[in-house]
Image 1 (tube, rainbow, N blue to C red):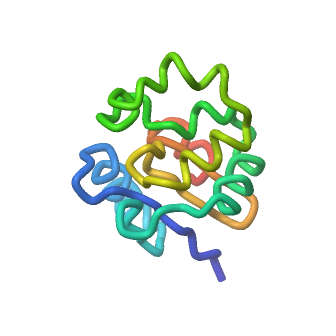
Image 2: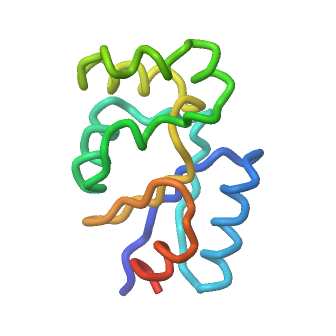
Length: 120
C-alpha cells in the first residue's frame, strides 16, 4: 500500500493548483490541507524543516504580501530559529507552499523536476 501524503496548500494559489494537477496526473493520492484554515503548528514546522534538509528561510513565502508587509527580508537574519518557527506558526500565508509531507520526505514549493525525481 502506498503511503498517503499530506498536501498543504492554499487553494487560491496558482502554483498549488499546478502541483495538485501534477499529483493527479501521476496518480499520487493526497490528503489536502488548506494552509490558511489549518495553519501548520510550530512542532510540525520543526519536523518538516528537519525532514526537508532545507534552510529554514525556504519555509517562508518570500513573495507573499504578509512577508513584505512585516519587512521580513531585513529582519529574518537577526531572528533566532525559535523566533522564526514561532512567527511561521502564526499565519499560514507566511509559509511557502505547497508543502508535500510524507513519512520520511518533505517537499517545499513546486518544482516539477524535483517532484518527478523524488516521487516519480
